[in-house]
Length: 310
Image: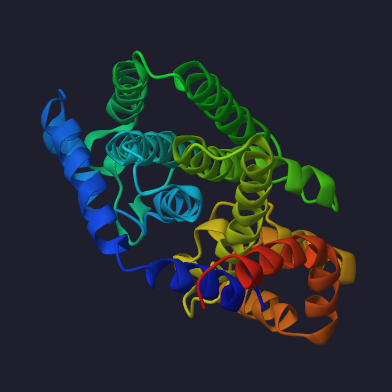
């Protein structure tokens, strides 16, 4: 359900004729920003192991949806989204230290290569530098204060979400509301900010900005849930970072409604991991999960059907 919805949204955005050129421009600014940094060799390693630029795609979608032909803000948007991607990368550095993870997307993590202390310091340096660069981009822009305040809020919310997540680890419970709150903050905040940026720089009205912000938040939630589900699709239990690190994600919370899975979850074996995977594939699990996510999926589906290219 989720993966089809997410892939459909991303696929439709990528069908826009100018999107590849847009992404190339954002990547150009990312490389320029990195080249100016201390530790640029270490940060370049992280960027080479980059993700899918989902936040950038959503921002560009809203910009092109509402902009006019005489809008000259696209270059500023490229620069802002390059900084958003680097801010996300910086948060991953901190995440890997907190999780004591040796890998990131199945490649050696920065903290594994250079140590936890260096990884934290590089992440801090990158965050501060991003803020400084954003001030330069927004200087003398009529939307500058609004974007700056939204960026500060998104960064603060992301950090607070990570704090809440860290303090729920290894505490198996049925608190779905707490999970939604955490992913809304930690994951949803930058998605929300990215959508807001695309709208604001398109010069659209406040109603559209507010709608885009809600979609970004909703998309961030379902995107994170799908990532959580994907972590229980591996054949080898040691490849599942959430399982090995005892991360309390929505699949585990839902399973704990169905049965007491504390033994399966806390005792890390291939057999126990396989049993969890079997439970995730049951109709009972899927039904409960669908009921929890129904309103979020409806909101995302409505946006993808009525507004995105088909």
